[in-house]
Image (cartoon, rainbow over all chains, first blue to last red; front, side, top):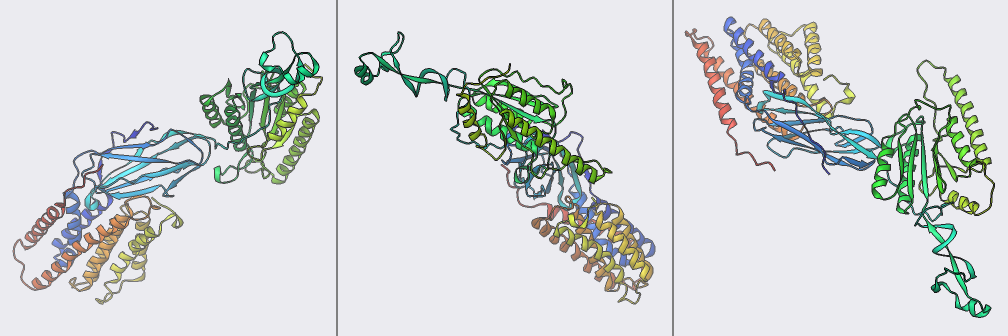
Length: 439
Length: 177
């Protein structure tokens, strides 16, 4: 998949180098003074510079090179790599090419400095780039310079714009066998509470009009002298709503190779859960609580998974502009499992989780606050005071999490793929029991 | 492109060391001829050379070279001492080191193939120095012929152009794919 190439600006042109100017000035002054003063020693010193400047001038370039840079991919997963290529046309006058790539954050390169050069004519060296964190990353931005033989003239450095590459969160698929608590759909992999044409045995019941003949259990029918049929439970898909708390990003992020911030954990967890459920045939939706307020409606299939990953990759932390008194409406329908990915440091998110649990919606809170998260404070802030405030905030958070657990909303820290397995199993078992919910 | 020393690649540090050492050696070369430079002159050249090493594409290099040439002119009556060969070599090495350093950012390692090319070029241009020096020594003491200087400079330029044409005519360029 190739991306749109970027080419050199039209106003770029050849200019004399500092070395040529230096050689010319030294040669001219030394020869002139030698003539005036009648001192041949200055001619001796000037001779190499006369040669260097003349040879530099002899190779005066005539054409205008055309530079086109291109990145091989438009979309990558974090940790994957691509190649930044440069095409040079009309550079017959050039002897040397220098590529100096920019150093965007969360992007590593090979060579690590991002600088390469090569003698021309010859293959133009490539630069390998690899984004280390999800998001939108500018790759392939670089400066390119060409030099003539004897270093007399230089073209550039020309700034070549890079390409905005969408970096999707790392995928960590897992094979969960946990059932959805309240499947309510058409066809899927989860056992439903209602009877249907599934494979899981529900019981053996007396024959009733409408029962399929192939389901008659002859052994029981002969023993009881009345027709009995095998009843099974329907298998349905379920809806899963992922809620990502992007009100703030807590903790340091070092990309895929280092420590993860709360938003890193939330985005990667969201991507992993989405991939698993899409593969299982479930309907997935996404709601981001944050500045962008991104939403993706229910859907299934690989294209929908791609849409979910792209939306997750574009999440930016920030407060909601028009927060409605801290209460968020998620418009959750029946048969949906809600997975809230949050560091639980905002009251509104806790309220949402509690409200959903009270309504009887299976809700799981995945705690994404890193263990080593520290508050980011502006310069001049009393660190002792900030530390005290942070500890108080953590105490409040622990209280909220405890209350949610008391309401029956499981709270689990994200420990990679499979984190929600056990919780979903328990929720599924609990869903079989009769319960009273508030509406 | 001013950078901290830690940002420089090893090859760039070597080049910049050569840029600093070259002009200082050129000034000190008057010593064996009987005119050791005063400490302030060495200090001034060292300071200028350091600035040149930090900014190899800047006009500081021209100033540094002119100071060296001025000292050479003022210090010695007989400029055709063998030390002039050292001065020419030191200044050419400094110039080429600055040229190589300015091919890319300071953190960019210097390419070995490019260095080889410039070493060969340096040797080629330095070959002319002993020839001209020997010629000047031979003609020393002879009465000045009218127009001898002009003819000499013109001959040098013609030789340079001829050398340029010869050096430019290389093998056919390899077709790029």
